[in-house]
Length: 270
Image 1 (cartoon, rainbow, N blue to C red):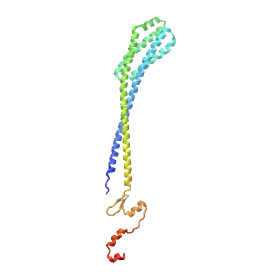
Image 2: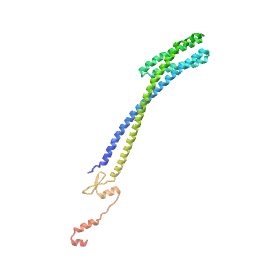
Image 3: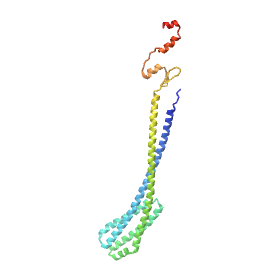
């Protein structure tokens, strides 16, 4: 009968526990990685909206400057940048509608801004057409109208409001991303520690296995040896295991004990 050793059992239990912890940490790492990717996506999304808003404001200003330059000089070279700027404003406004579709309040704000921006573009187009038609006085009168300036101020105010809102979202999302990345670092350290513990446990088990591999089970009564599931004599074990042949003799101690049990005349003969 083999008596189990407590040390391998404890090491095996520790190894199994470490494996469970490792699996749990891997699951957390996967979930945290997914959350970090999502947070990074939201940060990128917010930055893209900010770029679009800044581009709309810059192109609106360019379009207005090109329009006034054309009205003042009647030079056609102002029309190319004017056309490019107004076309890009329209394109960016459409793209912004898609980007903010997930946020209803911001989407409503953008709709108002879109109405103002398109009204300003209609005004700019009308002054350019009047100048082309030789009606500069009418075009200049539109430009000097206080409504024109107030319209541009309203557009800039709307863009600024949305930019500030996106800046607030960006700070929140960046903080969330930092938390996710920090949690990911902690989980990575936990994984490294779990792997180190598992490696140590495996080394201990390997040493224990090497120790038990060198043990031989002897019968306490018959002195026979258990080898490969079979009980054989010690001599047979030496032959099979080490290819060693044996002979028999009598040890001095055994001989002395034998002589003690013999009659005196037999001991004299021996």
